[in-house]
Image (cartoon, rainbow, N blue to C red):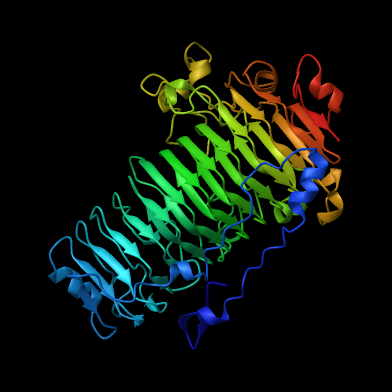
Length: 512
C-alpha cells in the first residue's frame, strides 16, 4: 500500500518498514540455459542492483560555491531568491517543503541539487510534488525523495520529480520511492541514470510531453515494485501501470536497467513511440509483460534477459490471451515513421527464461485511426499523418481506398525475431497450463468485426500479419514444451506447421 489513513491524515510508510523485494537466485540459470541451448547464453547477464547500494550515498561536502541548505531552511524560498545556475547542497537529515499541497521546488535553468549522505526530501503525505516548473538543464543527484502525494491514488498521470516535464533534466543516483503517481517525469533530452525508482503508486517513471518527447535516456536504474496503488484495478483499462510508461516519445535509449517485481508490465511504450533501443536490461518477475510495445514503431530489443514475467496476469487471464514476455500490439517498423530502426523491428540476442509466454506479436483489426473502437482516439498513424488523418480514416467512403487502407492502420510488420534463447520449464511456473495460455509463441490477430463500415473485417488482418507483412522468426533456440499460434488467435499449430509453407517460420531454429 502506498499510504494509510491514521486519524484521518494520510501518512507514508517509513522507509524502514518497506519490505525488501527479493530476487530469486540466478546462480544456476546460466548453466541451465547453456546446457539446454548447447552454446553460451545470450542476454543481459546478471542483474545489477542500485537500491540500497553505496552508489547512492551522497556527497560528503558541498562543491565549491554551492549554497548549503540545512533542514531548518525553506528550500523553495532559497531557490526562488537565487540566480539561475545555482548549486544547492542539502545537508544530512529530512528536508520538508511547506504545509500546502502545492508547495514544491521550482528550479531555474541550470540549477543543481546535490544531497549529502542521508539527505531526504519528504513530502510527508502533504505536498503533491517535489520538483516542478519548466526550467531546463536541471540536475538532481544523491537525494532520497519520498512521501509525495496526499493519499492512495493521488497524482494520477503526474510526476513527483520534474512534474512539468522540463527539458534536459539529468536525474542521477537518487532514491525515489513511496510517492503517489510517477516517481520521475522525463521531457525532451531527459536522462535518468542509476536511480532507485521503487514502490511508487503508479509508475517509477513516465516519458511524456503534450507535443511528444524526444531523445530520452533511461540507463542503469533499478525499477522495482511500482504501481503499488494498483491502478488497473481501480481504473480498469486505463493503461496506466507498471514499472514505467513512455507515451508519444521519439528516440529513447533504455539500457542496462534492472526492472523487476512491478505490479503490471515492466516497461511499456504506448502510442506512436518510435526509434527505441532496449538493450542489456534485466527484466524479471513483473506481474504482466516484461516489454510492452503498443501502436508504436521502429525498435531494437537486443541482448536483454527476460525472466519469470507475466505469471500473475497470465494465471488470472486463463486462455484469453497468452501474456508474452515481449508483447507487440500493432507495432512494427516503417521507414516513413523514422529512419532509426525503420526497416526492421529487431528482437535478437535475448534470453527468455520461464516467462508465461514468449514473443506475442498481435494486431486488432478493429483498432485503426478513426475507428470508434480505437482507445487512442485522437491519434493517427505516423506513416502519412497529413493525409491519413483521424477524420479521413474515420470516413467510410475513404478508408477502404488507397492510401488510407494501408496508412490508417498501425501494423505489426517487418519483425525479425532471431538468435534468441527461449527456455520454458512449466514445472517451475505456478498454474502453467496450455489451457491458461502458458508457453506460447504467437503471430496473431482476431477476426475483424467492427465498425460495420470497416474494410478490415473478417480475415484480412490475420492473413496479412501471418503472410504478407514481412514478419520472420529465424535461428532461435527453444528448450521446453513450446506451442505456437499463427494467423488467428486461439488455435494452436504444430511446430512443423509453424515452420512449413505457407508460414515458413523459424528457419535455422531448433526445438529441444
